Image 1 (tube, rainbow, N blue to C red):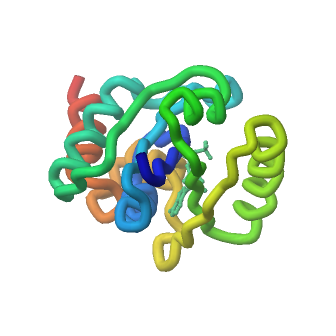
Image 2: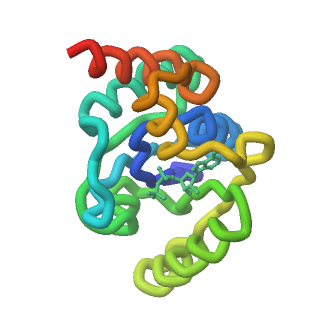
Image 3: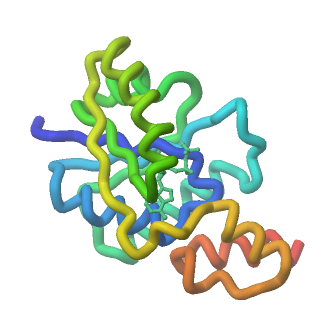
Length: 160
Ligand code: ADP
């Protein structure tokens, strides 16, 4: 079955930073599954089903044939195992991300024997979903920071 990577996140919204990680990992693994999780600690800003569609459209636009998107509840490791993933994927922007991710990765390894592979954010290390939303709420352009399908989704919500 090969290497199946599970890239979990809130993706609220999915940014060019996330896309960059998906593109890098699609080259490394046989399959990459983007998992949009429900994080009870975070309030949902954008409807998850709509975000799933926008990510799927982005993947199509980018011609990424070995990437798929799922929604899930509960623990990331449980969903990853259910989908036969053998590696978890996370992106690292800075030292703070590293500290945070290391705790989660340690627990995931302990409880599910699943290792985590980190990918570098590089020159998009400044980008976060909250920064995009801050710009969006204040009517500034966001086209530089999110894929086209995500930009269209956000603007369609504004016009309602
Ligand atoms: P979570 O709520 O699980 O942290 P996010 O949607 O904020 O979910 O991020 C998902 C993953 O993508 C995390 O590993 C995060 O560090 C990473 N990530 C977020 N923004 C970027 C970026 N600009 N470049 C690379 N990785 C990123």
